Image (tube, rainbow over all chains, first blue to last red; front, side, top):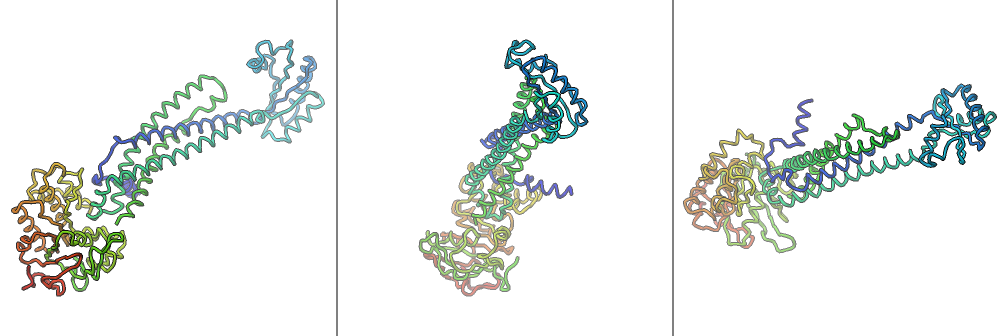
Length: 306
Length: 246
């Protein structure tokens, strides 16, 4: 097995091959193109992972959550219906926990929209009373209907909703953004492949005479392809490291800025160890992709020569 | 050395070559080269010497006809098998064709490296060869810093370092002084003595006389004449050749 690995690596890295063609070695534009591609890919992937984490954290928080709003204009009737609904919900077997959201907490929630004078018992705008309930298992349409029927008599002004339904548009938007991030990763990979392809073709054109000589001296296509593979591999490794370092700085900076917002949902998007390992795979995969592209391109071009 | 049952190393049968849609630069070439022979290919400029050499060192496929080399059909030979055949041929190009970014040492070592010889194994023969062509003190020089004659000597050293079964040289003494020309011919003769078939293209008639055991192939407007008769009635073995010398 170790010898197989060593052989595979040798075929990729061409260790020991003489430098048949001049090696650019990080002096040409190629490493920088790869660095930019890798940086953008890592950032796009990090964004996708952060969005996934955000969605998962929010979903876990909202799972089993049911909101009961008592939408009654008269404050006394509203409070009475809220207490009745609380009593009924506590007796329901499928309800694991329930609490009446304190008035102050509701006022804080709506303060950004209505201001300090917007809430409160004496406010001119009637604000519904809120009950936050958790049920065992998933919140299905049947479960909601069952709760709705149970509280209908005790609190006729009650409206029952799954908490996740409030955030469905947000989840939909997150899924769209995740697709966008995935599409960006794919597009950047295609762009990287195209850049390597052009670089390999250009290098082939520049070194055409040398390649012809090596051919006439008995050099095989595979030998020549390995030289280009190694050259592009070195460029890709250098560019990949620089790109990853740049992306890491950007991600850490943005992570701190978002953490500073103190918003619960955004906090849930923080990248974990597994996420960073996935991100670290980007430059490695880029190197392999670049080397494979160079090999295929060079072999394809060499087949046109005698 | 692997030849066919007749011991031939190269066999051309009714070979023609044209570039694009132009008229044929080589026409109706039919001849056989035998191992251990020394051939001079002569002819005026534009007679097709270089084109014939290109066919011999497998840089070009003919437009028609059949070529057998080392017992293999060179026309239908698969691409994968071409390098192995080429490694049996040493080539001295008219324009040297040294790899510009490699030193004289690396240029001479190139055929050995391509053949998979280790650095330790190639060090001494390459140094010896460069020493022999008088470039021991120029081993690390790049081709651009070498004179025309020095470049030619590097090209010759590169062609013979792998002890090829056939050596094809296009005007190999064109850029060297008479003493060096004689010295290089002696090298070719020494190789020939070891069994290497040598084909030297030249328009220098004086050179022909310096290798008494050589045979002459004369090209005239793409057609081959056979002034010594050696192509029509090829010798089985060079040492047995008598009365068909240049």
